[in-house]
Length: 324
Image (tube, rainbow, N blue to C red; front, side, top):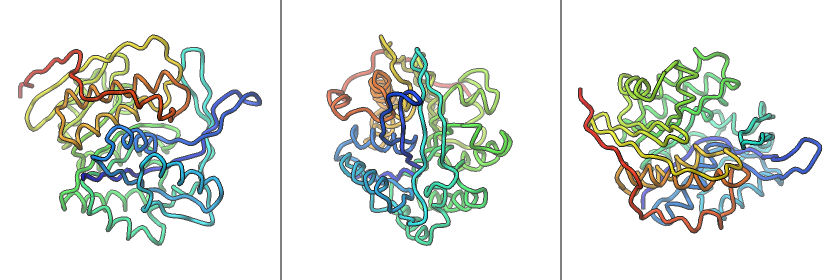
């Protein structure tokens, strides 16, 4: 069985209208991916979640919920002095969301300085792939970010693959220059980058996916997929100089775009870990994301994804050899 470790933060989610109807659940970009990956890959992939929670009732409830999803939680550290962060999602009529966060002292921000982090680092040497996002980096204090990148560099040397979703959130960084500094270091270690067109435009000024792919290749990324929203996705293997573009299936009614990119990542990674073709990986990502955005909340009921059949051929593929 292949094993992937996903690093990040999960928070309590409030979804609804301020001072009106409100649903309480949980979510966070990396945890969303972990949940959907566990559902998609089933018994073929072991999913470890790496984070820190408190010892309060909410933390205990989250651990139990993750275990029920099939996520391995043995590497979730506990901090009796801190609790999970909190965020509120507000939606407009088109399903687009805005967030309010309360996370400055969340337990997950102190992962690297936790006294048991060395044991986590040792465990990571035994996995096939490590996945993290720009948010996983951004929430850490600067010195902890640097230490984590150094740990990941040593793990890469031992053959562990690194997958990175840039997931740029300006509010979490002191400046765009700071984010670019840390991203550049992580790109040099990255086997697979999963990036979103809008984020790359905001942080790097890329005008199109061609700009993004050229930049990622130049900084050492081995493979990359650019998520283009309703336009689908574009994947490139820079070593083989091959490119695959997949159309996204139109969705009649978008309810909530929260975690669409996280769900795509899960479907794509499930294919990567189980050695599917890039086209199948992309198709899995789009089918899962397309289902998720038709429901409210970051993590939709398992019954809403159980009908998905990922053993199908993509609807449209454009493949070409990229000229050097």
